[in-house]
Length: 113
Image (cartoon, rainbow, N blue to C red; front, side, top):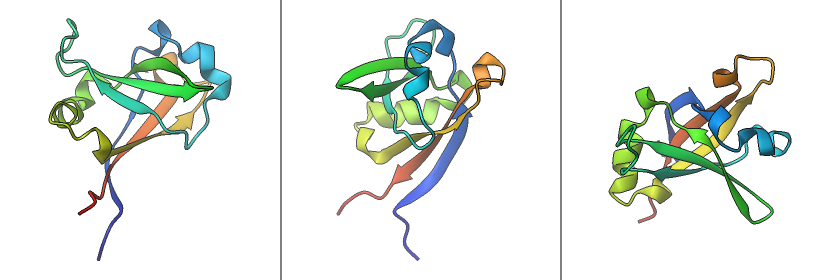
């Protein structure tokens, strides 16, 4: 049995109200890819992982992985494994509480030999 990617975690975007999620809300779509960036110098959390969407050649910070779900991803990003992940929007629900409106699923991709 072979896999191209395996499930790692499913969570929500934290802190979105402080960043640009509202600016691009209408452009976000389920299945849309997000870039994850480690922020080891973040004063609030040394394992902080920010989430970014790209539209029209511009990047928009939409929030962070929650503190309860970021340590493994941050560590792997710091080790140079940024190409090992597939991070996609899995839920968009404007009627949900603010911190639960954008869901993401992260999978680990097969590494090319």
